[in-house]
Amino acid sequence: MAEIKPGAITNHNDLQNRDAVNAHSWFKNNVRVTKNLYYRKKPKMWLRDAAYTWTSRSAATTSQWIPVVWSPELGLFVATARSGAYQVMTSPDGIAWTRRSASTAGSEWRSVVWSPELGIFVAVSDTIGAIQVMTSPDGITWTSRSASADSGWVFVTWSPELGIFVAVAEIGAIRVMTSPDGITWTSRSASAGSGWHSVVWSPELGIFVAVADTGAIQVMTSPDGITWTSRSASEEAGWWWVTWSPELGLFVAVANYGTNQVMTSPDGITWTGRSAPEAVGWLSVVWSPELGLFVAVAYNGTNQVMTSPDGITWTSRSSSEVSSWRSVTWSPELGIFVAVAYSGTNLVMTSKSMFQKYASDVTASRALDTTYTNADSRTMTVRATVKCIVTVAGGNAYVQGKSDAADPPTTAASGIVGIEAGLLSENNSFEIVFDVAPGMNYQIESSVTNGTATLGTWSETR
Image 1 (cartoon, one colour):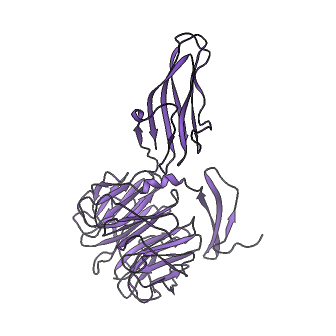
Image 2 (spheres, helix red, strand yellow; image 1 turned 90 degrees about the vertical axis):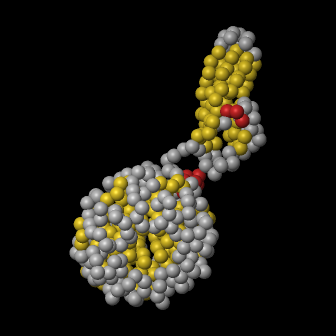
Image 3 (cartoon, one colour; image 1 turned 180 degrees about the vertical axis):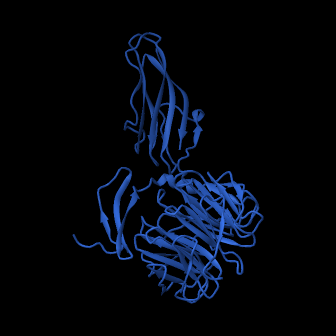
């Protein structure tokens, strides 16, 4: 069998609810390690509407919240703050938040990450002369740790494949540090003395990519977090955050200023500028595999959310309110995005859950044997009750849901319910349920001979 090179992909048989299981191999200490990477089926487009509707939530306290992260294993969101009496808050659902104490006062906590393999949160601070690292196994109790150098640490990420944390700094003599456990840190040399603001790991490519908001060099890459190579950004801009989409094989970075405030790359080396829909301060971007969607938030502007299915074409969205949104994260288990703000009235907002459906009772505007169109971008479920009565022995009264592009629709979308060859005055109520795809016509067709079919309730659930 041929040796699998680092970054190689081997396809295996499909599993239920997933497109493929990919065996990804890399080398650590000259030992080949293999991990299965699961890719979900292509998401339904109507699910993306979950990212278009946002609701304000109350933070646990009025601190200056900067990062937020989700732990699937704990079922917990954790946010940390730059200032305030309480600089940590946690939530199981993104709605109800509980304030927590940081390990020490006087540090400005700029980034937090979760390591499932180690079962710990790690947060870093950019406050010179203070505690710059803290860790927690549960988001509640935090312990101070020593950074490798007194620098302005603003971002930290985790590589499960290499088993290391990597943090980057915007100021200081040392601008990269690594740790195998979040406790003991080692200084590393960045490729350039730029203001490094974000770093992400790509398991598929086996590289870290960091971006900077200042400096002549604004991108650098590394296969191990130790040796870094300078790369050219698509253009000079305030690159603030970078994320990775395994499904698209694409890095996406956003900037708080610049001509093109989005750039993308398939390999972290060659970058292409993309247009943001509005020239505002984009500070954070996250990828949702389940929705097949990037979501970014901004600290200013009228529309402070933008979304993209491919990192190239972006659409403005309205936030729940105008606040200084600083970070956004995704919870696949809850099917929601959560964003936190540095300042504003409500300092948290959540998107509608992709698992949530909204029902609207439309009985008053619906009738049997009438064609309607699902103009929504989501598939909807029609649920109706119909009363069927036979007025002459042997009469018929039955209904059936139909849906397709024709007008009237002719394709059966449900089974037939009702009374056929019934007894005189036979009287029964029936429920009919069927789905209607986006853009399709639909109706409940009745067939009556010596009887009646009367609509009762009618609701449409999206």
